[in-house]
Amino acid sequence: MPEVPKNAKKPTDRQPKADEQVDLIEVDIRGVHLVIDANRLDDFELMDDIARAEDGDVSRAATILRKILDDEQRVKVLETARDKKTGRIGLEAGLEVVKELFEAANPNS
Image (cartoon, rainbow, N blue to C red; front, top):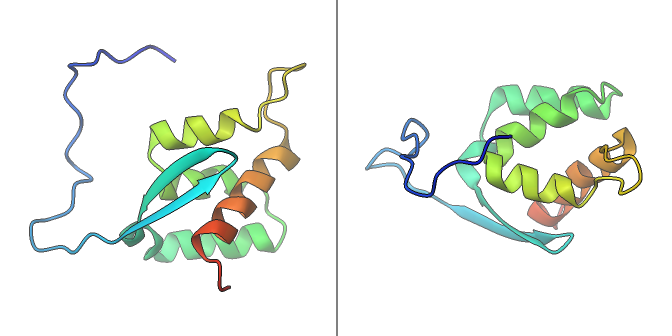
């Protein structure tokens, strides 16, 4: 992945509207501190992805992470699951990251 210059402009299309309340969920998993916009969890398609993943469609796990975390956070947390020998993130390891994320974000569920 190419390195982004420090002074590069960041997209503003995902910024909250001025009258929109931003609730943040802060969690730590695998030594990575994550700050999640709670509004990202209020998403019908995300709910569908989660339901399908729970029904065995594990291909939805990557989509779930993309919908919840920004790119920087997603890359950081997935790096903790990368196999040092193969350089890949195995399916089980990636699924475990998603599971840990939801357990940390929803401790009472």
